[in-house]
Every structure is written in structure tokens, then in C-alpha cells.
Image (cartoon, rainbow, N blue to C red; front, side, top):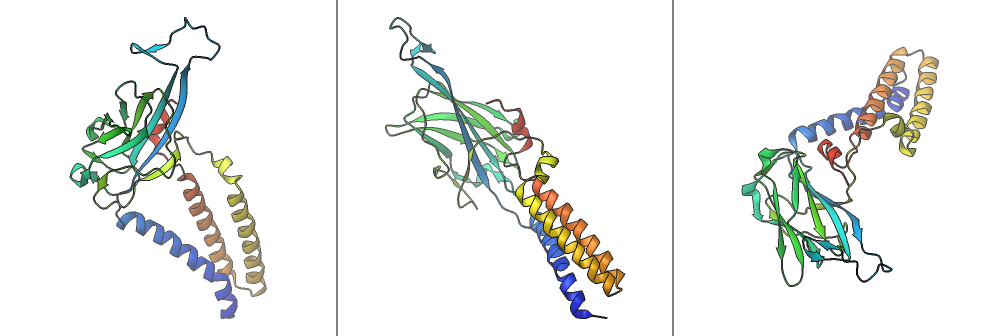
Length: 252
């Protein structure tokens, strides 16, 4: 028996199996709180510059030239519950001097988390303060904010607030509602094509080497490893949505 040939062919199998086992162990036993947030801004009303002076646009009795709607999404991406007792200082999202036109409205994924938001005004900034009783994994809410001037939020924006066990509340950037994964589209991505090509080459080489060595056990091992790897790859691809399923109902 050619142990050198066997080791060359079987070592990637060990790597794949170790990766799969490590992934599921980390999901099962490594607990972490990971609050994340995102934003999406849209201009919904604008008084054009060529509009007659007699034309007045009002919102809630207040004269405005433009009105923006910003959707803020905040949820727990981690697998450990964030309880209200873990919040040492309320989470606030600073918008700048945007001219808030009303109190924010909240749409949470369930009533039990008691998610709420309110506007906080100061001389230097206008902010949205968040509150909740608890957030399990993927629990959270979408907060609709109506304002007069555009905000300056970006992925580097640091939001005040202290949650026990959390170093940073990561911004995911522009919010995109959850979409059901398209398996065909996932298979057309450059990464998937590379995996398929390399997997086919390795599979072909292993079959050839196994047949030449008259070791059909190797062939069986390799075939099983390739199938296992492809399933693992597809699982990772299908879980790449940044946002939980409940966000699919949010209209932008």
C-alpha cells in the first residue's frame, strides 16, 4: 500500500472535516453577543427650485423644502441573548443636525422584546435612543425616522452605548432587506466557480490515482469528501444574508 499516495489524497479530507466540525462546534458552544445596525435613507419630498414662491410644503404644520426617510435596523447577530441588564448605557444612533420632524416609529420582529425608540435633541446633534427588554439571536427592529436634512451616517460611525460583553456595535452599512437565497445565482459567483473547478480537478486526479493504485477505498473516500465539501460550501453561501428573515417585510 502506497501510504505516501494515500496521505497526499486524504489530507484535504481531514482539513474539510475539521472545518465542518469546528464550524458547528463554534456555533454550538461559543456564545457571543453581537449587536449590529444598518441604515437606508431616501428622499421622499422635495420642493423644486423652480417652484413658485406661493407653493408651500408643510409637514406636521412645519414648512419644509425636503423630507427624508431613514430606516435604521438594529438586531442581535450573535447567538447569546442581550438582556436589558446587560445594557449599562443606552444605545443611541447620532444623526447630526438633520431636523427631526416627528418621533421615530418602530417595527420589531416580535412584541415580547418591547423594542422602543425616541428622539434625543442636543445642541450638537440629534439622535435616536433605543431600548428593549431582551434580544435573542436575530431579534431586533426597524426604526423609521423622518427628517428634513440628510444624515452623515457611514460604516465608520461609532454609536454611543455600553453593552456588557460587547466591544463594538458593528455597522453593516446600507440596509438591504432579506431575500430568499437564489441557489442558481450562488453557483454562478466567482467563488463558487473556483470551488467547482478546483474540486473537479482534485476529484479527477484522485480517481485516476486510486484506479492506478487499484485502491477503490481511496476513490470512495474522495467522492464522499467532495460531496461533503460541496454541501458545506452551499450551506455557507445560503447563510450569507446579512439581515434576518423578518426584514423581508420592510419597505424602503
